[in-house]
Structures are given as C-alpha cells and as structure tokens.
Image (cartoon, rainbow over all chains, first blue to last red; front, side, top):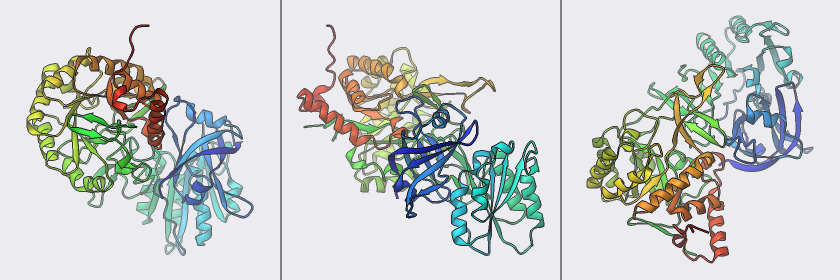
Length: 271
Length: 304
C-alpha cells in the first residue's frame, strides 16, 4: 500500500522523562496499515524551519473501544530542534504524519522464540512486535538497556503482554550493570541447545554490531532495525544508506527507507 | 487554460518538473505521484557505470534548508535503461535524464547511449554537482570547459540538451551564454550552493564529505535573481529551480524569466505537492486573466 500523509490530531503527549515523551496521534488509516518495524515521517513545523520530517518507528497501535485501530503513538527522544518541538506538542495540535513506510520485521512462529534487544529509544519498534509475537504464540524476551533506571520505560506494558524482561543500566541503578549485550550473551550461552531463537535489535550502532556478532556466533538469525539520518523516507534523497551485502555478497549502499529499516544482521557491513 | 511550455523541440504539458537527485528514478514516487501529470520527470544523475556515493552522514539540516553530499550514488546508464525506462514509459512519464561524466568522453558516451533509447525526451547535462572531485563542477566552473562539454555532447545527440548550471561562479549568466553559443537548447539553474555545517562539539563537519550543496527555501531569492540574470542574457529557455515549495514560488520563477521550473527539496517534505502546485498556477492564471502560462514568462515589471 502506498503511504498516506495525514494531518494527525495530537490526542495526548505523555512525558516519560526530561527527554522522552510518547505522542498519541489520531491516524486510523496509517494505524490499520502499519506492520511491526515500520515507520512514519513526521513534520515538526508548519513552516520551513525545521524543514525536513523526522523518522519514527510506529511505537503502539492505538485502538478504540471496539478494538479498531484509531491511531499510532511514537516514542520520541529530544535530541535537536525537531524532536524538541515534538516534546512540547500539545493535545489538539495537528502534525503531518506520512506512513507507514519501510520493510517490517518478520514475526517468528513457535517453537522459535523472539529475543528483542533494545538500547534507549531503540525500544520504539518492539511494542508492535511484542503484540504480534503474542498473537503468534511465540515466546518473547526483551533485553532492554538504558543509561539509568529513569530511562527505562513501559516495563509493565511489556510484562503484561507476556514478555520476559532482562534489564541493564550503564550506572547499575536497575538490572545488570553495563551494556545490555552482556546479559544477552549470558542468556544465549545458557539456553537449551535445541531452542531456536531469533534476535531482533534496535539501538545504537555499536549495540547492533554486537548483537549481530552474538547472533552469528550462536547460530541465531537476527533482524536489525537501523537508524540513519533520513531526508524523505521515500527513496528520493539517498541520504539514509546502510552498507549491505547483496545476493552475490557484494557490499552496496542501500536506502534504509526502502530496503530497511529492518535488515538481516548477517547482511549488514559495519563501517 | 494552456499550461504547456516549449523547451527546444520538446513541448511539455505543464511547466512542472522534478529536480534531479530529489526524486530518485521517479518510480520510487509512482505510488503517490501520477508521473504522467508532470511536465517532466528529471531522474537522478547517471554516469556510465554504477557509483557508490559518499558514506553517511550525507545530509544535515540548515535554517529553512539542507546540505547534501550524496556523491551521485547511482546505478549507471545501462541498468537505468534496462531496469527503469520500461516502467517509466508504461506510466506515461516524460523522462529527462541527468547526464554525468568524469571526462568529456564519458558525457558523450552516456548521451550517445541515451539518444538511442525510446522514451528519453531530453538530456540535462550535469556540469554543476558540487560534491564530487572529478567531473561535475570542474566543468561547470570554467567557461571554456563548460563550452567544450556542451559542444561535444551537442555533436553526439539530437535530443534537446539542457546544461544544468552551478551558482558557485561569479556570473552564472556568462555560463548560460556559453551554453547557448555551444548549441544548448535550454539551461537549467541553480544547482546547489557549496556550503558547510560544523558540529561545534566534535569540531568536525556535519557530513562525511566535509562540504555539501545547500538547497531548500533558504536559497530561493538568490536562485530567482540568477534565473532573472540568465533570462536577460540568453534567448534559449531557462528552467528555474531553487527552494520552490508553493505555486507562488513557481510563479515567481516564471515571472523572473523561467520557461519552466524544477522542484527538488520539497519532494522530501511534501511528496503530495504536485496537484497543489498545478491548481495554484491555474488559480493565479484565472485571477489575472492569463490564458497561456507561457505568457507569464519574463513578465517582471521594472520601475515604479
């Protein structure tokens, strides 16, 4: 389905911390069409400054009382002028939302388990994936790392959907002390040898690289959601490229908006 | 109401074209833009061979604009002809190909290949990309070599030939004149302005190539001035571009002397812009009693 551009009503803006917020946006058509791992491009200004849209994973699919998709939420971390505007958006505002865009995750079926690995704002694509996994009846784990305890969000949300949580903080204030890939590596080593696991990861590039490496050494497939500075989300500008091996093994720059943002971990060539 | 415009031997149904490098090969947008409704689709620049382009980050935002150094990543002319042209033709797109080269021979070779391809309506000669060392701007910043490339390609093709000019020179109009004297059917301008953004925390350039080309609404008044100057100096049509984001902006370029326009950066922000641009031009024509859009070209009133 081609993407839609809708003037979405801001239903709610929930501040999770000084830098993180969740925007609830009314966008029924985009919500019905979105698959786990897809993204939207949001215009943060009505004028020309900031000029470009910002890419966001679809975080939650919002539903009305009858269970019909009514909108999407996005998990936003304030890092620049565009995200600062979204941090301050108010219910009743309208934002141009273009989507859904990109290639989604492939959802594993039982007996395979899905182990999701999130670093910081990299939690964003996993809420929709967790729901899809629950529907598929696949066992789901979330390895979730942040700087500190206050940067870990939606823990109850995931737990209530049958996701087993494994937390890590860089300051040791919650869960394992250090990077999330440490508990992930331990869990991979100690799992029963006959348990098939697919790793899903989204977060900083070094984390993705580490997850791809762990996946390879433990013989697990991996699906990585990459993050790039993106101009259009439509394949027009060629700014969001990721170096990926093609079917003949030749590394090429491909546009993450069209060929991704989800890539097979074995195909990504790390810079 | 007559929206058609003439570029050399080519008649376009309206003056609205995509700007090269801002619309992929056109097919990326086929699901949301009716390609047959556009005056022309100017596709991303093509060399003889595939090119990888620069490593990311390739863009950075600026006030009302953006800086890019993509590095002309592209699939090369042969793959374009094989993989993209059939579908572009099926969709009814009028295709103008942006031709790149790192030598005069390469410009000629790419142009020769495209001249034999059914459905290629015109060639835009990219002598103005600021982001690659070899080719591109090295030809576009020197009057003699700009003339030489245009003359060489002129001999190799009968297709309408449109050199795309860089604004990174003292007098763009002299380059428009050189293009005309060497057989160009039209000129298009402006390509991007060479510019730089620095991350003060890291003290490094914001994009991997160091410098890049500035585009978007920020450059529009300079582009309008340059189009005006060129239109004063040449008799061939001038195709104007630079920060167009509304029908008002299109009209500004037409009045300054552009026979047609290209829309680039706006595709990134607002891919559904095209029907609104056309409706806005029609509305203006109705309000001002203009029957033919061509009658608006170069109608700037000077003096009070």
